[in-house]
Amino acid sequence: MRYDIKVVVAPESDEKKETAKLSLHFEGQTTPVVLDVKGSSLLKISRAIPDLAQDFLCIAACVYAADKALARKLQEDKWTRHIAIEIPVEHVDSWSRVASELSDCIGFLTGDYWEISFRLGEKRLIQKRSRKRQPRYVRPTGGAICLFSGGLDSFVGAVDWLCDNPEGRLLLVGHYDRHVAGPAKDQRDLKAVCSHHFPDRFTFAQAQVGLSSGGADTNFRSRSLLFIALGCYFAEILGEEVPVLIPENGPIALNFPLTSARRGSCSTRTVHPQFINGLNKILKKVGIKNPVVNPYDLKTKGEMVAECRNQNVLKSAYSLTRSCAKANRRRYWTNRTARGCGVCVPCLFRRAALYAGDLDDEVYGKHVEELGSLAETPSDLLALVSFLRWNPSAREIAAGLLGNGSLPLDQLKNYVGLTKRMRTEVLVWLRANGSDYFKSEVQGC
Image (tube, rainbow, N blue to C red; front, side):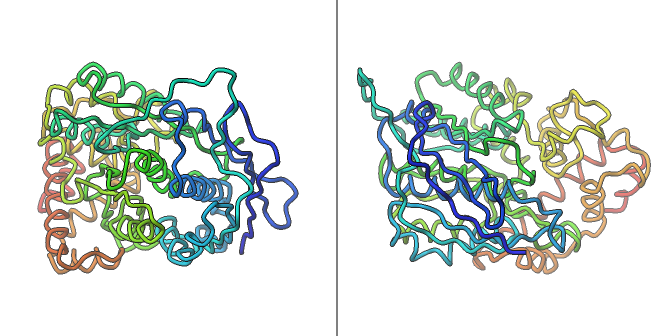
């Protein structure tokens, strides 16, 4: 089924949120989906509004809204949607030249078929309200943008950059959706830790973007596009070539298919090299000169933890971070007050990484130590155990990686080695901490 969507801009602006009022109108439906963007939080950091990156933020917000509004379970294959959306931008010609490439790039990211087109927008997304007394204009400074999700990887990324650049300033960018519990508070708690250890070394920008009411889909595949767009928004203000860092351990970015059933659209690609490289090419063609970079694309999560530049800061705050992909699905948890489920792939990688540093002491919704049979084993853990027992060769790993998305061939050997190190990292942890059942399952691995 094809969904035709037109993004409509209302004549009046939302003065409180300092944004234009945008809504997504679905052909054949009378009720539009209203975009919820709090522009005032962006303008608190800088009263300047970027040019091309402001368009990019509008595009990403509309894609995120459409992604969230359309239920996958209603599709014939219970997943793939055909989304045709017209988005208002200021630089129509620049974006129209890359419309096809952008559609393909976002399609790879979300596992859908996108047709994105553009028209001249009646208003910019961010709308400064008139003030009787103009606030003092302070231009933000910084040598880099670091996306700050509230997760362990992004926290390590921020700490590493601040340690490696003792005279530099960093701009941390957070995103939250008011209908998704957790990220906003996680980011603020970690920001407080950074303020204590790195006073006056960074600026924190936390942006609210989502829908005015709920959403039918909860996969949030397009959130990374929105996060990157928020980073680019501030990077353009800071200056050309200021990088947007998206810290993510390499195995999660690659998301090697642990079983044949987890290939294709079932594989998350939020920081996959094909997506990041493709998006960088598109942004460069448009004229956005700020590169998007994952500094840890060849590091396992355990290596990120072990090599963090300030171990004292890490040990004081790792428990405030959250790595769970299913933090809002607590129905089947044994302990529903835990911060993570303990059995999704990000949680399993987290436990293995922290174990190596003698930090695997957290409470989870479920613990692998307590699972004693195949019937009790959640699907992610079952897939991981299947991968450990498979013990693929370098050639098989290379084939699996290339089948999951294009990669630079000159880096393929490094990605294969990374996948092998991830396997060893998880295997060491599971042998030490798994239940007797799991220890017997991986005994000969």
